[in-house]
Amino acid sequence: MTLLLTWPDTDPTTELLRTEDPAAIEAELKALGVRFERWDLVPLPDAPTAEDILAAYAPQVARVTEAEGYTLVDAMGLVPGAPAETAAAARAKFLAEHTHADDEDRFFAQGSGVFYLHADGKVHAVLCEPGDLISVPASTTHWFDMGTSPHFQAIRFFHDTEGWVGEFTGDPLAAAFPDFDTITRSR
Image (cartoon, rainbow, N blue to C red):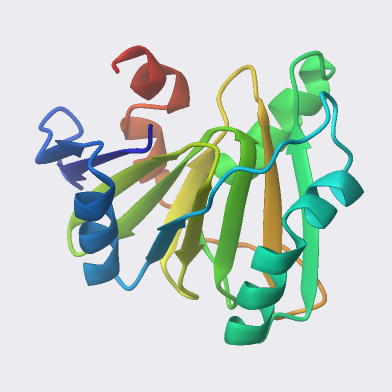
């Protein structure tokens, strides 16, 4: 089940909000300009390829691509058993606070990850689960954590054919907040 946690950006020990209610999550994120929706899950093979995932969700991908004008769509992820150094390097790439010139749209076909949004003096952590689509608007300060044992397969949507390009803020704020492992243990 998707989870939304919110803290003041000055105090990671004080939870202002904790909810698994999809309507409440959607409303809270909408107030930040973040699109959140749930898709019905489609059966996938045990070890799906990017092509399997994109084919399984082709109608939904076509709808989002047309509505949002995306020019590049791919699927990627990490699964249990990936080399530890590969998982650690992938995790480290996204843990620092950053922005993008493009929207960051992700649909979780399998597994989970946490998007942290730093907006309006608060940090909002969205634990995304299978079936979740989140669209973080361009220029929104955020970071992403997939945990110490990553397991997720996600469809990514881009307006720019360069794909993922982050502009890091240099702010150490992200390190102060509960990480993926802490959040998933606290459920």
